[in-house]
Image (tube, rainbow, N blue to C red):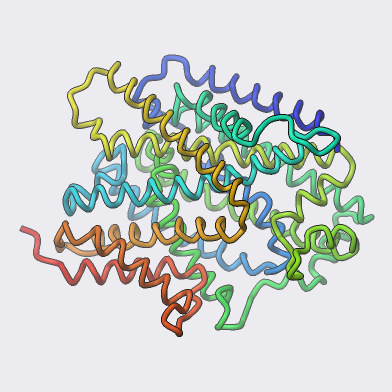
Length: 491
């Protein structure tokens, strides 16, 4: 696969994004950046949220993981419907009623400043770590497949590649913010879906299959088994289903990056339609990812040489490498299609994260909405914060590249998931009870509960239990109980 072709593809795709950014950024102001002037069409937001929810890691991991975990992701997808319904019926009415720009300002009105700052800080840490890892993995693929000479040496240092990628994400969102992201997400979702469909068609052609052959072979193969019935596994179907109910509430409903776009809709009713339409479109898209994952697993089984190239020293198949290995070793058109899909999934992850982090840091930490600054001053502060977030992104990616350890990457993902649990617990307590709590105790509770759960999950005390993805619910429940211990009646 020619790296020149991939580089040209990258440049053309980026030029399209900048054209969209220029069109949507005209007459943009601070309100456009933070809330899209609350004029976004609900269906456009819903469609674009598909691309925003699937990062470059998801683009590689969901299909690749079918080799190791079959279709055991499906029960979680079914649980998503209930999770998004909770967001639409409980959280969105609350956010619109309080006219929030940052959703964490609810915590200040409900409990106090300590709870507010804790919620915002947990979001910033979680989003920064998770999004920078996702962006790093995509930049790492570009760096090693595109920016290389024939002798294997690299054209530029890694930190330059990382900085350029993040700079592009900043430049096309710096002016329009949410208003720009909504439309670029729409384009990128389209490219990502087309890339998956075309990749599936070409890989099936390599196997000599038509559409009917593909369905029958996938159905007959063990990789399409949908339910893990071993209760001891974190992938047990009931644990996955319960996780599907809870995870969207925490990672979408309590995530500034995801909710910021829903709050840009014209009113509550349209925002609710956006949320439910989004999940109904998301399920078939993820099912498509699982189907191509089964086809890739069958393809790898019939090509031992390729399978050996993604098998580690311990004999474990590295799932994230399966899709790129197959795509970049077939005809050039498959490699180009895969590459477009990859960057289509990666740009939203980076751009959404930096925009939402800028919003949260500006409003929650610096208190922009409460300060009597001119619009020009607010714009200058917002742009400085935007640059600081971008620099932190690049530094984290350089650190990941220096360490080059899968265990570090997995640890960062774990930390990111632990931070959403306390957020979920705090919001649950605020919404489900009418009692207040000792505001100064909230930061300690939100720190100590994840530490305790980490010790149980990893058997630090010599005993423990694998909660799987349901760990987030356990942390939320313990946080809720901790706040209840310090509760008091509202005056």
